[in-house]
Amino acid sequence: MPLKTGKITLTAALAGAGTLLAAISASAQTTSPTLEAVRERGELACGVIGSSFGFSLPDSQGVMQGMDADSCRAVAAAALGDANAVRWVPLVPAQRLTALQTGEVDVLFAQLTWTMSRETDSGVQMTSTNYFDGTGFLVPTALGVSSATELDGANVCSIQGPGEVTARDYFTSQGMEFTPVLFAEGEELRAAFLAGRCDVYMIDQSALISFRASLGDNAGNFTVLPEIISAEPLSGAVRKGDPLWFDIARYAHIAQVNAENLGITSENVDSFADDASPAIRRFLGMDGTLGQSLGLEPSWAHDIIAQVGNYGEMWERHFGQTGADRGANRLAGDGGLQYPYPMR
Image (tube, rainbow, N blue to C red; front, side, top):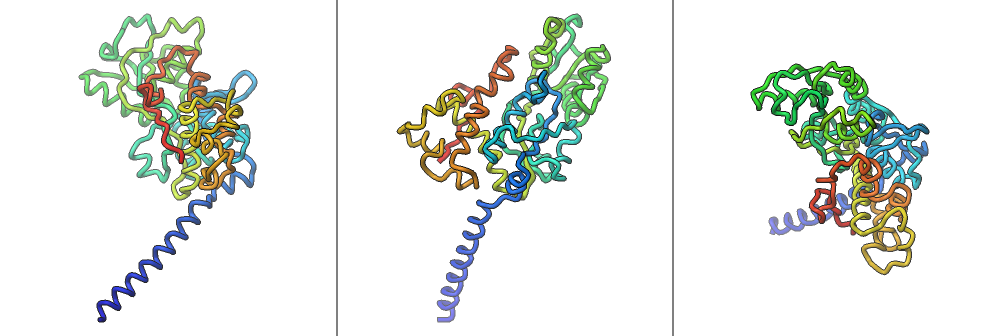
């Protein structure tokens, strides 16, 4: 009998604990200190590199352009209903994690590679890969090389830190010597490369393709070598400890991928107002509670697509003119890695 009583007591205790945990979970899912702070100030503080063609670089009118810039705008559209309510915080690579950790920025889209050590050691959480990339090589065409395996003895310009490690790993594995020429930021690195201080510019291949394209008539003086020597999934990041904000930043990207998969663009999004498809009605906030589950307005995904566009639009806007192959950044249905995770 005592055992039975104990069992009943334990069952009741577990049931009570379950109720409490459910209440805590429900509360946690609808409250975000970061979202509240963003709404109170009326703008999103977004950390970007700010000097990288194709990712974040002011145009002739001073408007920040690029994949990372548009990813920031997508989060702002979701959180505030206004994709332009962004305060840009330009950062050199060495400043990125610190700016996020200290609260200087609310979210980071700064060509940050998703690595285990960054998530486990830095108090930050990667949200989603907005560009699948890999480390590549750019050389003067006059150097006369067609493969990275011919770079023995080269002076190699790269960003200090991870870039140096990747270079050392590659050259060591190939049995080649090299001299690292390290820089804290990309603008300084590019200037040094153009000035002839190094034989090789080594960084994410997307950055090399974009940089070469930005040279206009002089682009032919430089060659992007075919090798990609590392996996560099470039991701947004937020601080750990605010799970709802993490969800918002993650699903802003997922919404853009889903929109492309559904054929919804910035040009036609409003034409779906009377669509009978349950998936589209949920996605655009006409039915269901997807917005409520994120603490957002029902129209949050509509606002992203109407103001920023779907993922494919974003990619074409910033990389289509470079002649780059979309590759792994195609939708999964087209052989790429951008997967439209179910929104239901």
